[in-house]
Length: 318
Image (cartoon, rainbow, N blue to C red; front, side, top):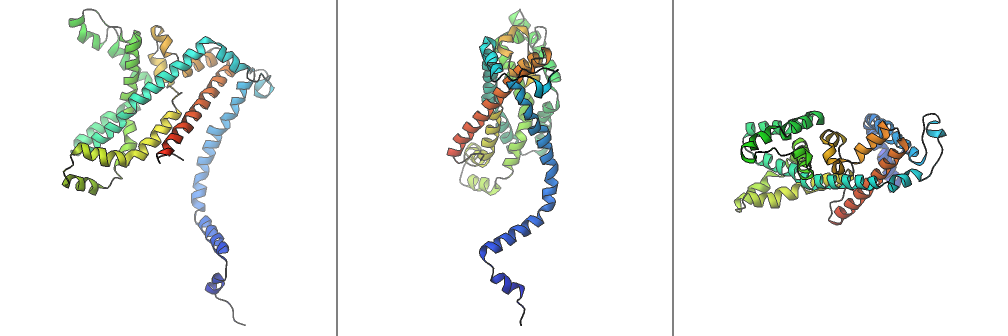
């Protein structure tokens, strides 16, 4: 009796059996990568998903004595208390206004900066500028806010320069219009350089021959940017924008808290500062958990809506 060779045996297998064999072989080859992925899964499970269980106190009247599980249920009572307070609507409005203005005004700056750096031909100049614009990202908001306050204070550098013409100092940090401009401007100064890195990485993937062809055809720099550069990094821009929209209800606590003062309190009080003052200083954890839960739901809805719009143009995140 003749024994079948491996090739003959494989030839008699059905396509489904061959596909399963390939899948098992591929799984065995990728086992080291799966093992390397375990710490990542553990990190997100422990530090990202497990704390979500704490949202249960948004539906309870939490107290230290009874703990999370022993505190009485109040249903949507915390949300009713939260939204029956007129200050809450003002805080939500402030959060939304500051976030949307920061997003709409600040979002193009990293893209513009990345395109300008990409067009720079002197490497020493490019590296010097990159170092200069990356540096603010590594400074804490305490330091940055201290610099901003020093520059724009009534006895600061700007008022010293304007004093010969104006006579009286301008209270930049105590008027809502100028405070808002300083708030958005300081955010752009601190984050534009660091945000440009991802666009520089996207620009490096564009084929240089496209620019050479466009140059031979007579296209100037602006046309090359409009027809080659921007379309080349469009998917990256869409992804970053969708992720940014997801954080539209999260104004940075450090930036607002360190630049805040009583004169602009009606504009600068946002969800993060309200949560800190009510939750940690007054120990109303359930109320602030309800506020945080509401903030997360709004962020999720905005991400889904933005992705749905982007998907209609073939640039959706999923």
